[in-house]
Image (cartoon, rainbow, N blue to C red; front, side):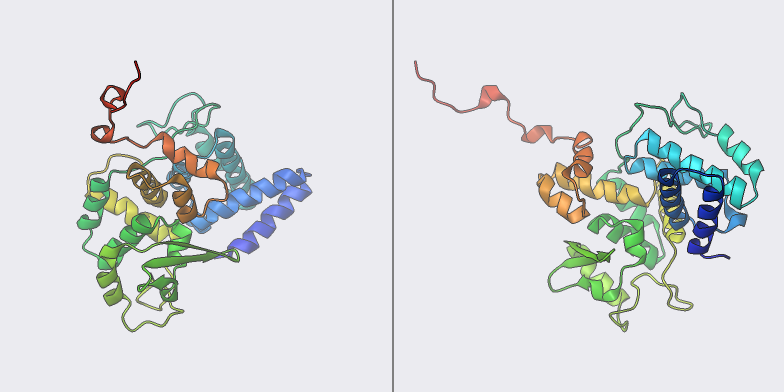
Length: 297
């Protein structure tokens, strides 16, 4: 199977031959990089269902309709001009309705003004998902994804040395940057046991066969399976765990600045989208009529 970079070079060549603008070339390559990181480009496994799951996962991150359309355009170009699968392009185009929301027929909304709040789960739904898994590694994947607010790419690249049990933190590294997020207290004993005997440079979630890191697709499948086992009816992905981490912290009165730092957002605007879906705890809200304030006659 060709490597992602090799395929992207082919895509770039085809775009330039057809005189696409530099901006379009850049946006298509970025879109396809995201898609292939979600599902490595095994041409035999790319189908409509996979593309739908990818778009739903991106929508869970709060992308704009224009970005969703760009993803579809880039994937269509790849399938038609590079992969030589124009029949998939026709089927794919027919699977996206430009006026309706994602529904049971499998349609995904890419219309203007259709930006949706990020998909989240309740704390209890996530605990049910964790409890539904007999595989200890899979349960830990969901636990740390939710408990530390990690992206799927960050989780597959997590190494033993990135976890500081004494400080109770996880160091997330990537693109020459590092951020610190929380390590759930509940995971310490189980995670220490799971990592026993491993070197600091080894992957936390690895193949027992050869020690290589798991693919992002594998982690997405773990979430899918756990969701089904727990009876979750929403369209969810690994990003849903991270969304839930942010929303639950905000609901429990963690400052939005702290949540921004934990998530590694450059802009506070990226974090503010979670503020629109938090459910205030009514029992803690005092009516203004109950305020104790002396009034001067």
